[in-house]
Length: 287
Image (tube, rainbow, N blue to C red; front, side, top):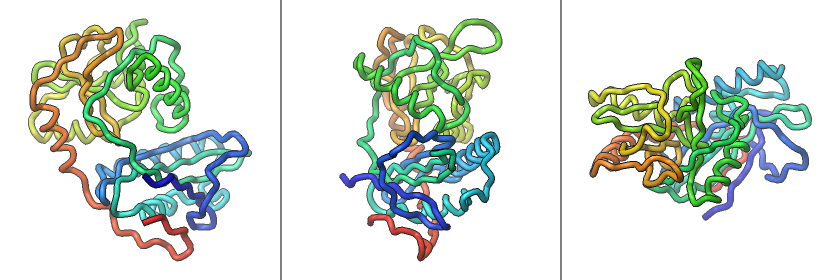
């Protein structure tokens, strides 16, 4: 497996950067996606999510679009052009602040091994999220929760959130995933009142559900209410995974064949990366 490579956007080009930070940096917005032999799922949605988050957080932190030559659109195109069209990759783009200066980073990372199944564990402590609607600011906290889940032999932590209706804490999202479940023949997702990141993978699955006539329900559920149901965990790296265990939680089920059908449907939505010429001044990514 190749080592990850980090580039900094400077002067309209992606330049090699040492991956060791000598000072703390705060990530304002980030996004990542799987590229498998040049094909990617819903790249336009990833672009929109990152650009919208970057614009909102930049404005909130007083960062102008032209400060230090920041041009998020041009940065995005350069990053896409730098991704090899062969092999499996899991690139990430970041808008961050270090030493009170904003910078855009592109991390070209080999894709980790992907899995079909996952084990969950409920996080019972305080919610560490500071920006639950935006991908990026809470990445470090979510990584910490996932590590804590791994300490109890789970793969992922489940965060619980509250609605305006009362103090009950309902299933909101995983530390690196969104969650969905099946009630009879209806696909269910957490209530829109629960704070969570707008998952590109989930949006793609919901579009498939609409296209195939599957009912989609939004609901606020306690973990115990998922007992006996088929539960899915979704993210950009793994696509759809079946929940086969939940530490101190519900006993989940699986309808034979359904997961494989939907994973195949989702994979069929992958499209080739767009052809974007790499600027002569940009650093070339490894082939």
